[in-house]
Amino acid sequence: MAWNTSGSYTKRLQAGHPAMVGIISAMLAQKGFDGPPEIFEGQDGFMQAYSFERQYDTSLITDGLGIEWTFANSSIKVYPCCRYSAGHLDACLDIVAKYHPDWRRIQHIQIRSSDYTIRLLAMPRKRDPQNVVDTQFSMPWQAAIALIDGKIDADTFIEKNIHRPDVRELMTRVDWVVDEEFERRYPEHYSSAVVVTMEDGTEYSSVIDDPRGDHRNPVTQKQLENKFRGLAGRELDDERVERLVTLVTNIHEMKDVGELFSITG
Image (cartoon, rainbow, N blue to C red; front, side, top):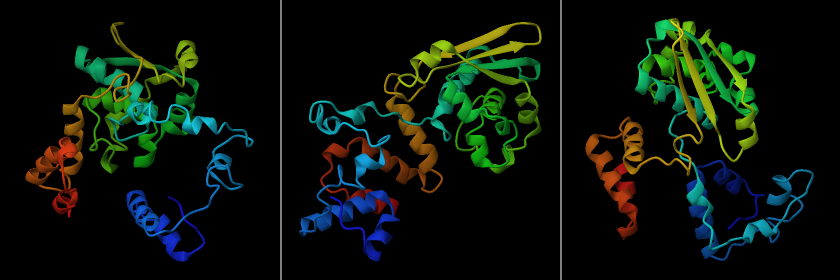
């Protein structure tokens, strides 16, 4: 339930954590607070804010309601960088896992993807990332470090890696091209392909139709838990991390979610 947004208290809430705002909204609604009656179709409502030239179809809000569960088709980000990077990173890591190429003997790396992916991740300035966020949106940097390290995780995107000489050297051998088939399939599919050519002419390639984490190529429960362990373990001890894994896995049986907060507090 939304509420009037004119008060300073409300503005402070809006700046807070979305989950907390949702909880407080529900508590206010329980006490009789209401919100704008035209939150969707009003002059400054949701439909106006998220439509192009104020053209929209309100029937889509209720189409399939209670039957189709859109959340089930959500993607999970496997890598801590731009989601559009997932395809070429999957391909690079697949090549490493299958062929173990010596990056020093790599002559050329070509990445094929959709036009928007290339424009987002491979514009000229992406050749020279200067901070962590730049690396999270740099196709050549990501391909180079993936082929060298054979992994991509939270420790990939850190300050000391930005200007690594080996990564910078291999980056110069990366280029990209729009793939007409991938472009035709976008945005239904975020497809990418990588071809690594070695000095002796050997080619290693990998094609990714749907990146790992997509609902058509979902991560396993074990992969999801391991991602959580890698992130939560930075702040919590192993015992609490494993307790959280167990509780969340069986959350449908939990009678009091307060136990979750007691572990993380």
